[in-house]
Image 1 (spheres, rainbow, N blue to C red):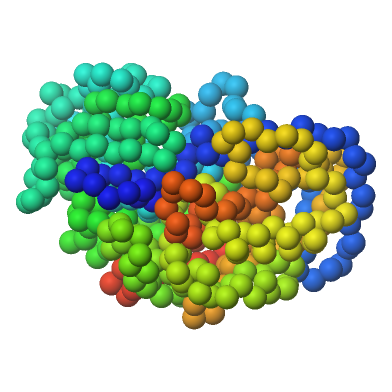
Image 2: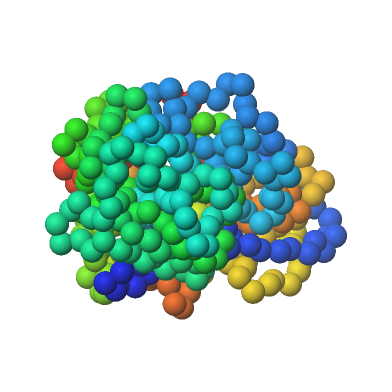
Length: 430
């Protein structure tokens, strides 16, 4: 969730499920076979792209850290009895369980590297989140204190999200419990009391993992030295969030790219974000040869709180054209789009047993190539399977944003003292 605009209050951008809503009206065009054995393509059973409604018995993640689950996935423990239609792409928002107070009170927070404020809903909220029975009761905690415990920070906060949702409240200080052995007194977090908009069911707030002064990363630096990693799981699996030495132990198998400074043109406090150099993109083993200046002028950030990757329009147009050419043997979903739709390259794979999907590669600095298989390329269901990228649009941050869909099942390690981010495959199975 990237910050949208500067203010004395905290503003940041939430690419939540509202931005992902899209509709497709299938045209009934027949599906043609794809050419097999072509380099740079994955032969994919279409059935494997369908959402799963049961938590896998082999789900392993979280054994070495905080468990991560998809918001509407069957492993979350908070999924609705009737999951939302997969056509709307509401998954790929990821939750972790943390606790505040003495005795501990547990909450499900969105894992977000695109913002720095951690907050949760508090008792006596005026406009509450969708789960009114889960809130932090400060009167029930013997270690709570009202207001900021960090110098030069105001006691109250306001956050406004890109979909016009807002969160308002006061800061409080209390014990944060990540794991039984990881307990932090006097942790400052937002005590949310007034919400507008739709944050979705099963969400109690946000775990801010940016680089800002109030982030969880900064406030736990004395123990974890500002190093953490995660694997964002598929819907029927469990990922993990690791801090400190547990995260560092994974580094030998990763490819690293340097953290860099932002372009200095956004008008925001860019020091809170994780900027990297995105140099080019390949589709089906063919470089698009996008000038690196296209990405450098806006800056590229890694953000677990944004679902769909956002590219500068010039880069997105090149990616879309190359992807449509590679998928030319499959029929486009022929339908009208509605207001709020951001995914505009969709296919009807109904009746197709195996689809040949082009691999997309993100080329970062220092040779850190991140290969995107079909799960990281597509979003939606078989009759409306869409390219999970979009262009930037007016009124939002102009950053290039690498979102959670493109990070699915990767190990992503943030080494802030080493000024680098590492990527590795099969992170959730380790």
